[in-house]
Amino acid sequence: MSNSSSLNEFLLLAFADTRQLQLWHFVLFLGIYLAALLGNGLIITAIACDHHLHTPMYFLLLNLSLLDLGSISTTVPKSMANSLWNTRAISYSGCAAQIFFLIIFISAEYSLLTVMAYDRYLAICRPLHYRTLMDSRACVKNAAAAWASGFLYAVLHTGNTFSIPLCQGNVLDQFFCEIPQILKLSCTDSYFREVGALVVGACLFFGCFVFIVLTYVQIFTAVLRIPSEQGRHKAFSMCLPHLAVVSLFICTSFFAYLKPSSISSPFLDLVVGVLYAVVPPAVNPLIYSMRNKELKDALRKLLTETLLE
Image: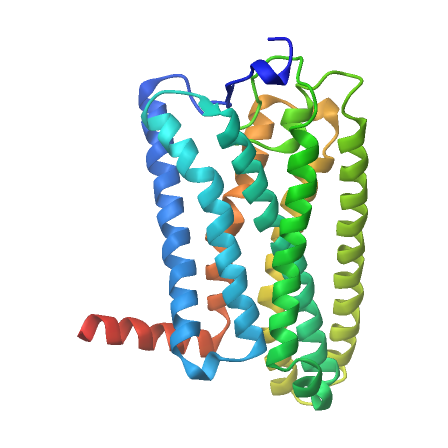
């Protein structure tokens, strides 16, 4: 297989070699996928149907749930289908589409988490100006900017990645298509352009990370100055779910892409891939609904009305 023009498909990393373990993988991923669909779907429906939740914070949370549904739907169904049909293959165009949509959803989610940090900063540190600075128009613009940044980033990297000649076969050491695995198959003298684009992206992501950290330093400083214990508890309840989601997203993503090559192995890559591509979309709804009384009340009302119909 001399170059990418002769590639018709890629071979993904299999979770197991025996038929029984393949079926267990299918059942496990099916359960996680259904949990993600149910959790994020309930949050989207509750926010859309309850007018009390038509605020900037919940509008951004609705977008986060949409991105989580998109990201897990990009990787998990194909992996489930491969295990069910005992195959490892994904078509060339399917791999390109998987990378394109996965970058859209993950990049947009990171941008959205940055916007949500800014929203929490305005609500706690500048409450008198909150409605002016984060009105409905500004909220929609910020969410649209997050989606647009993900789309542009995906166009850049997908185009760059699949314009590189591939000389190292078609076997990927991951259960879904991702750019680092494609670059491993590239000719040694032809991938520097994409590496440069990845470095620029890493700098932008690091900039967002620094912004989130500095924002939370100011938020916690302001919270600790609140005289009443009830006020501090309410402020922490607003911030902790978002902070937990950000920590999960950043820790798993950073470890996936920045871990030393000396400890890399197919099994470790597989585990890390599950941690950053599968676990967060399934866990995020639980994190956000656990300490949020308004959201829990809306979900309870939605479920009650559904059961009574």
